Amino acid sequence: MKNNRVIVAGGAGYIGSHVCVDLINNGYDLLVIDDFSNSSPESLNRVREITQLTDQSRLGLLQADLASPADYQKIVDTIKLYKPAGAIHLAGLKAVGESVAEPGRYYRININATHTLIDGLDQADGRMIVFSSSATVYGDHNKSPVDETGRTGPTNPYGQTKFFIEQILTDTAISNPHWKICNLRYFNPVGADVSGLIGEDPNGIPNNLFPYIAQVAIGRREKLSVYGDDYPTPDGTGIRDYIHVCDLANGHVKALNFLEQDGNNGSHIFNLGTGVGVSVLDAVKAFEKASGKKVPYEIIQRREGDIAEIYADASQANKILGWQATRTMDDMCRDHWHWQSQNPNGYGDIKDDNKL
Ligand code: UD1
Image 1 (cartoon, protein in one colour):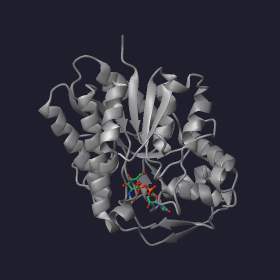
Image 2 (spheres, helix red, strand yellow):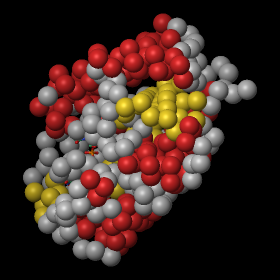
Image 3 (cartoon, rainbow, N blue to C red):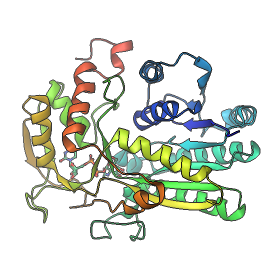
């Protein structure tokens, strides 16, 4: 019988909670490892609600810090006891600017968390990892659409940690042929589960475009700053490949199914994107249409380290994993807005209802 137990490291976060929903709906039992340093336990309650989980043992939780030496043994022992088939690895820090200011913290936490997970899975004989990498590993070296053979070279410590972890996992797979690895290079995840119960809840001022637009639309922020309109793109603003977080989540299930098949040992890389490039001003317009709210903006100078344009060639994921993004920009805006309008302060409503 198939082992359907999976560790979800960082499972309470924005992407993690959507991955949990899709895994549960596909019959997997989960053990989430999370320290809630940038997430809320409430997201897991919402996952239970969305999936109408009656058997609570199907979604276990170990509250622990994968990067902390103090928690190391407890985590490895728990994984050994749980005997998972493998793990989805989404645990780590993810703010670009912060990583430039505190590179040591980023390298230490993101990389140590990975080693702990590798050790636990190795000792539990569950040598399978689906890793949340990022299109940021491509830096600014490629013409779009970029495929997995594109030149790598991240431009900040956060991106470097993603790149190094891909290398660590690949070397681990070389050291022992029982290992099976998928490095998933995400493009720009946005949107939320259609229920509006889970979604992105950034700490403080959002760095990324969609959460910022959503907070302007709901009235938490006055206006959006558009970082430059003098890029060599049709409207002068930056072009990205926005992907609905539920499509992205499903990519993890497909990657896991692929690794579960006999013979797919070793390390693999897949882009997860839609292949469609959308400008900042296009995104603002689409969000205004979906929300019926005005999103005031002002054009300011470029943000350092930004690139003009990047979007995916995701044909490998289609061909090998049988995966494809199906949701449109309108779906992304509608679902992002649904989450934001139902939860104006994110999960913060639970502990602090005077944020807005
Ligand atoms: C950023 C990170 C990337 C990370 C990804 C996660 C940088 C340089 N890169 O990518 O490493 O993997 O998020 O999703 O931070 N924009 C504005 N105003 C804003 C915010 C963004 O105009 O307030 C523009 C940006 O200039 C860019 C586009 O919107 O053209 C998307 O920005 P963002 O959501 O931050 O994503 P990335 O820069 O692609």
